[in-house]
Image (cartoon, rainbow, N blue to C red; front, side):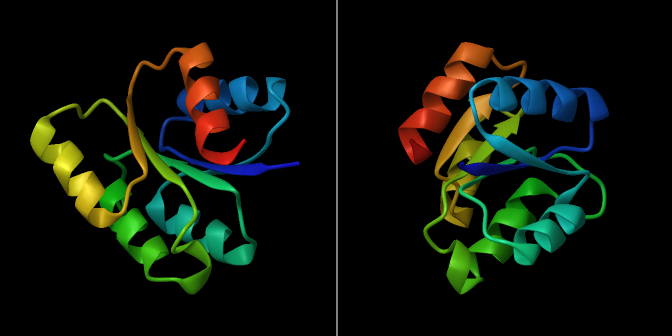
Length: 120
């Protein structure tokens, strides 16, 4: 079973992500912010990281940069799932190493479609 690390400071968003992903057969690990996400990513390899941008302690772009600095996460797909939709922010995401970008609120079917595309 493929594992997705869902990093978001909103408990309701993590709950919606977990429900949507688990319903499609994925295992989900939840993290409350970038610091927690980095810790949980280092504890065991995941198939995909889904991260918000605006979080306390460590934002999504910083998390992506830190993960890309780890040999085991150089090629792991990382999707930003955020309310941020500006071209500038998307460019920063690509430069940091994001694989793709989804805007909140997310469509569950579209999320699963994208997840399947990047990890099967």
